[in-house]
Image (cartoon, rainbow, N blue to C red; front, side, top):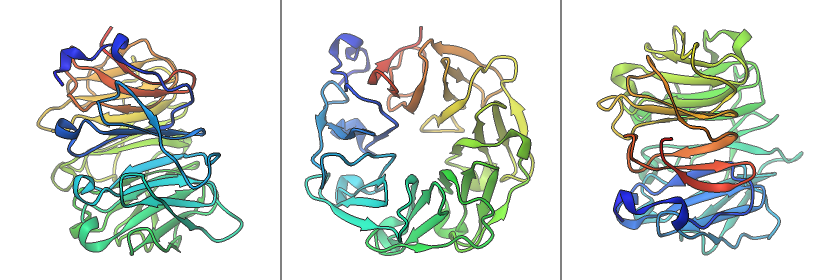
Length: 317
């Protein structure tokens, strides 16, 4: 589908809150995307022109986190975080297996998957109150790994693109930011300004091993960036960004293309230069999810998930 063919008139809205959107690694050819929220999981194979509810093991299962395998075009694997555990499908959502966490059942609020998933089968689940769980068998079973994690209220996870070699991932929590260098087996607190917590969004550079770039969004203190793997932090967009930074999305070819976008409870903002300068992209409020499969140029549509209007494509105002 050509970029200019997508517009609001072409789009079928999802009539429910959307908290997470994910795009197939082969979106350019399969046009596949998924959206999830308290009312369940939705699938589109025509770039979001139409959406279909995905049958889950129970019709009333809320989905708070969603991730696809990096090899999704081949293995068709999907993971959904819900109340009490993780739902796993190996056939693009036609059938499901449920992996329950130990009781009392935690809410799985975040998911991360190893870039080497096909070989190592590693998936992480962050929970609201019970810390982080790790699976080494493609999500079949889970073990708690919380040594050094001083805050069990995990809001998001970001995994190094070079995880197979560096075993690095980050966890944003209600009180700060934590880092693991041994595949999530132990954690250390990052020197992120604790007064800026909670950390409600994370984004890691595809070239993290070389550029050390990590972005952190907060509820009331704006956006921060680190250029040295999390050792030091600087606030950015102070004079422009307004509202809680609910989601951060980097360009697919970042940092060769230095563009990124953030969504807040007031608007969607974009930067062409790694966050040095910002403009208002769209006056769309309360977006919880954001994906830019076509790029971040002015004329390119981005797919967002919202509290009241579900999922929709938006183009720069």
